Amino acid sequence: MTAYIAAMTLIDSGTSLVDAMAELVLAEAPACEANRTMTPAIVDAMWECGLMSYLNPAEAGGSEPSFADMIDTWQAMAELDGSFGWIGIANLPSAAAVAAYLPDSGFAETFGSAERVTMGGQFAPNGQGQKVERGYKISGAWNFGSGTGHSEFVCAGFLPIDDGNFMFDANGEIMLMAAVIHRDDINFTDGWHVQGLKGTGSFDYNVADLFVPEHRVFELFERTPNRGSSPTFKMGLMAITAAGHAAWALGVAKSMIDDVAELAKVKARMGDMETLVHKTTFQRGYAHHLGMWRAARQLVVDTYTAAEQVVADGGELTVDMRADMRIAATYATEASREVAQWAHLAAGTTAIREGSRLERAFRDIYTGTQHAFISEKTYIDSAQVKLGLAETNRGL
Image 1 (cartoon, rainbow, N blue to C red):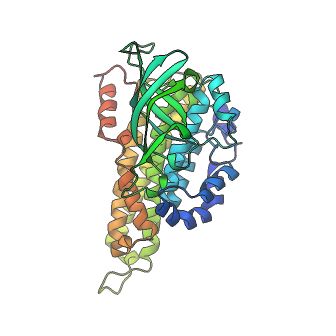
Image 2 (image 1 turned 30 degrees about the horizontal axis):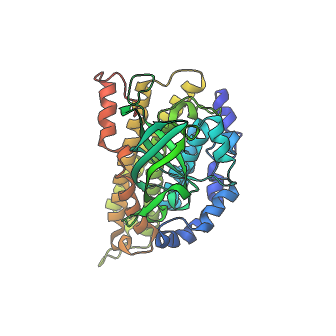
């Protein structure tokens, strides 16, 4: 065991924090769906147990967990409830990235302004920021701002423009940036009337000609943290986000395969005397999809842990390694959706009744896996790198 991984075992597991909230999460899930955002009871409990700040740099009250622990934590959250899990991969990494990459004055202003600094929003560059003295005037509209319903601050990706021209980074590529904006300065237009993930408060929002000081913006593909000693911060927000999507899908799928296994002990098809658990067709399907789930999960853990160790040892996170991580995350997402589909069909009409975790999880996984971040394009981008057709791709 290396020094870095050994050190991580001394940190309290994030899953223990999730376990402490399990009863509350299951009880509040219907209310979260009805309210279309997390209830105050859930948000309060996340802060009180330390889960909301768990991924943060130590300077922002976090534990800086390893990728393996982050994956375990996100999976455990999603197993309980898809919306709760989505908050885990939205609010937690957003706050961690802001805390790690903002300049010192921006960090002090943001994290010194409130006891609870919850971050939501969207990093896709759907806005433009005109460069002005000491900052940017930003205009734009963002859809599906994950976790904004209960966030004090909202993140907004934008394209910086100086004197009518796009700005470029050190590699000569068009710069993409993220702004940190207080919710009081945001115009929310809701729009969150959806099939699944109803409890995430992922509202549409916009700003018009809003001044944001330069100390509250950072480059989207930044990998040089100003705070935090964990190698995860040197791997960047893209790597953390992709791992989160994979862990979330794995968690929702695991809840469904576990629930249908329990259901099979008591459910019999109409006109059949034997319960499903005694049917060889069910047994074969269960074993096949459980194996698929385990293989997908192990691929994600192994791929991310290996890359993390390279960075911890002072090595470079190469584009080839980043492609491997995105392939693993996208494959695990697709495999999880297939597992969920089998579980839903195996459960029969039981899975269509409103109020069951099976029914809610099925809606959630078919909503969450529509996300562009783990779409077919990530396979194509990764393949072009692996096949030598592209030398780099900063989005991986």
